[in-house]
Image 1 (cartoon, rainbow, N blue to C red):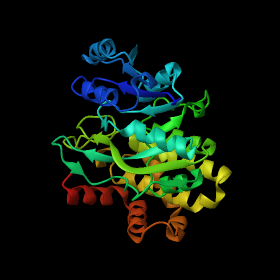
Image 2 (cartoon, rainbow, N blue to C red):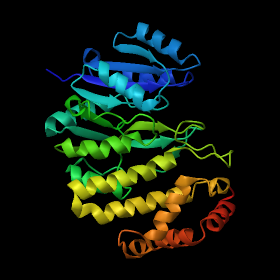
Image 3 (tube, helix red, strand yellow):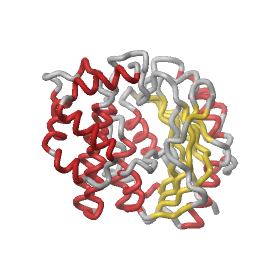
Image 4 (cartoon, rainbow, N blue to C red):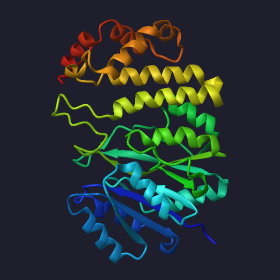
Length: 332
């Protein structure tokens, strides 16, 4: 008998895209009676809640839940509370999936006896154009150890998203849920969960389609020069969490984890608007202070490129001037 899959879709003010998303999961070639779809309305103020109720009435395996707004993590965690599947998948409400995705993932999970399986992804813009791959798909299926996937994440060559994964339900426990109140939740949960995973299988098929739309939680509104999403602070905080985890469980990856922290701070400093680089911005000041205190570490870290080292060093010396010049060059 095949295993049951639960797919959880958190939804907030996404009335124009939620039907396409949900129906892409409904149309999977995996048996409908073994495919549970949980859609959680996270306190939407548009017609999203009404639409998912209609979808629930239309499809017997779609179940709608409603809650006060609390963010994607809290919506996912509510979905996990109601999930009855043996394996869990997630889809963001503005994305969509190929109809073969979950049958391919489940087949790989069973044949490899893997706790976690990953499909590859592509990125699509609002005009339907395929964007450059964020994560390069493997040529053929590969099986890697959890430590090796953590290494890939710390080197920015891996995929931390749970949306491209099928995960054994037993891995989600009371102390292993999505952290609520932050935007870098997938990375945080992934690096902790990897300690419990027996192996990860990565598949080459690009069956998960990420839709980049202006105004989504983690995608920058380019027309607003002062817009600075909190995800940039979350990724810095999580780099420190990753370093402590590595020191405890994977000490051989410590230099790579330090490199990760430097690069996350570089990303922060190359995106923060100059208007927010002020003396009363404590977090900004802590990032600059960290880089200044670790100049020797930056120079000696063999995993940083020469370009990364150069940027980190000049940003440590004159962050506002360098950021202003960088913004001018990029036309921001």
